[in-house]
Length: 307
Image (cartoon, rainbow, N blue to C red; front, side, top):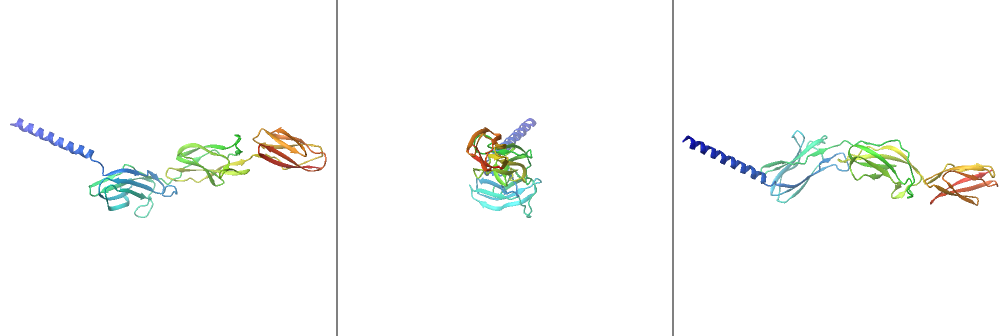
C-alpha cells in the first residue's frame, strides 16, 4: 500500500511539474503586446541638434496604457502618458525632453522608458535605455599652424589638411572666419579635416584666414571652437610693390608662387624665369615703369622708379 501511495505521489509531482513547464513555455511563446520598438539612445536637452528623445512602439492589441521614465534608481521622474486607451495597431511616438515632472532638467545619466498595459496586466521596461549627455566633446589639433593655400586647381597646395583627435565619438567641424566649411560625415575619435581654400564654392580671395576647429558628439553637444591656424591664400605675390633703382641698374624682386616658372614684362622687354628671386635691368631713361609678373592665370605688378 505504501509503495502504491509513493508511486501516486511521484506521478502527481511529475504531472504538476509538466503543467508548470507547459505554462512557462506558453508564456515564453506568447507574443509581446508591444512591437517595433525604437528609442533614441542618447540626447542632450541643451543641444540644438537633438534636444529630445523619441520613444516609438506599436500596439498589437487594444490597450489602456501609461508610459513613464525611470532614473537609475527606479524612480519615476516623468509621466509621458497616463491611462490612455489605444486601438490595436496604433503607432505611438512619445517625446521626452529631459525635464522631470517637477520642472527641472534631469542630470546626466541613464534612464529607462516603462510601459504599463492595464488590459494585459503587464508592466514592460523597454530594453533600450536613454542616456542624457550634456558634456561637450574635447577636440585636439596641433597649433599654431600657418599653411599657405593656392586653390587654383593646379594640384599644388590646392588644399590644407590637419589631423585631429576627440575624447569621444564626434563629428569634426572646421570653420573659416567663423563660417563652417566642413562637418565630417562620420563620428569618430580621430580623423582629418581639410579646407580646399574655397568659400561658397569659389576660391577665396588672397589674404589671411583664421581657422577654428570644433566637434559635435552623438548627443548633439557642440564644443566651443578654438583658433588653431592662420591660413594664407596666395596665388602670386611680390615681396615689394615699389622698387627704386638707378638708370640701367640691376635690381631683384622676390616672387612667391606655386608655379615653377613665371613670365615677366618691363618696358617692352619680356622673358621667363624660375620662381623665387627674379633679376632685372632697369630702363636707362628715368621715369616710373610697370613690371608685370604672370604665373598661369594669375598676375601681379610692381612699380619700378628709375631715378
